[in-house]
Image (cartoon, rainbow, N blue to C red; front, side):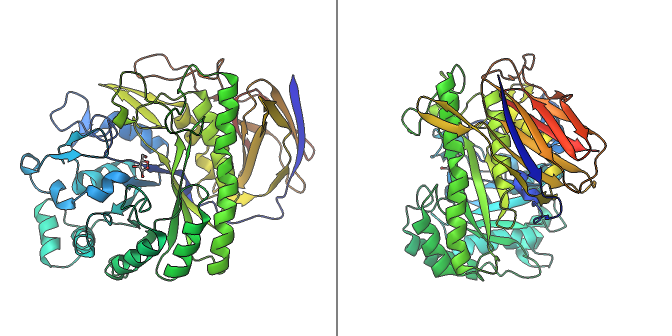
Length: 496
Ligand code: AHR
């Protein structure tokens, strides 16, 4: 069957610019995210540039990754930057207490991270240890990274091989301080935040955006206390973390493959809750920051399933299927609704961890369905949002109803209007009719991402089952666009 829906593109009422940082990545020292997935070392037979995998860098460059958040996550609050500078063979080995107790060689430290970010062409988002450290360690790390002067820390950076200061456009003052980052109350953390930020010395050398730890899920009390106690001058952003667990149960989250239609519906039902949570947090922010100075950084989002059987439970390794690709696009369409506040997001996590865009196995690499959704949405980076009025019929299973699709539109920097659609309906195709209003278009082209099964997937070393292909289902007649879209798919079209 085919679901029918009609809508209107309000090209005469453009919204704000969708910040390219909405397409950010999160890379933590966790499992094979860094070691094996990003860093293989200079002596590895796997092709690398100064120890960093060439295949991974090339794939991420193609995604135009705008920003990478590092070194954690929970890991950040036990990280001491001095462990990760200087000759590698002299760096201490530590226990990664949060993530499987695995050894942390510190071979990937500050210089290696910036080398990685610079090879990819991404900006750096550095997370500071607030939970188990102090403002002095933060200040010294910042000075080490960004000081252009002749001070001892800048000289030390130079003696370790980097003359020019690094750019740190975003700094996170803590991570999940309500949990692994220190189990603090919002009142206690607000005071800690104020103390730390006072020693950040935002100015010419450090112009970075200061991001305070925000809520998890729908915890508006956290947002309220932070906004009230910190105010809109001492911070530039507040984070929001939300993970999609098909069952909503941390003890039994559900598998990443071999799931049924009900699990598909449950997963989309859970992921779309983020929309309502964002609205609630924005309402609180509007109260304390009517000027909209403070951005909302959804700097951890994505699916979290049971780990692949046989893998270390602390390494959060899961497979990535068509469901993840469609889910990524559905989240992009949600983020695009709030361009004034949602100025950055980071999927958890880039490589081999949770909803990864890349999976590796030795020298093999796979671009996951999530990767392809990111790639198809590249034109939305720094594009101007255009409202698209459309109501989706519901898809119901097991007493749960999800919208059968969601969509968003924007005018890209190349001058073209793009429309992205996530068809979350696992059964039915979609026939969309869009009134383009005053917009003049002669044709439509694009790509579609779909596959035969809900859990079709791409694994390192195997033929990929989910790859985008040219989209042929669009037509423009006068000011009407019609799109025929297969079930369980992502479609991004350009109006020509
Ligand atoms: O992404 C995995 C973990 O999830 C992060 O380290 C932490 O911030 C969150 O709880």
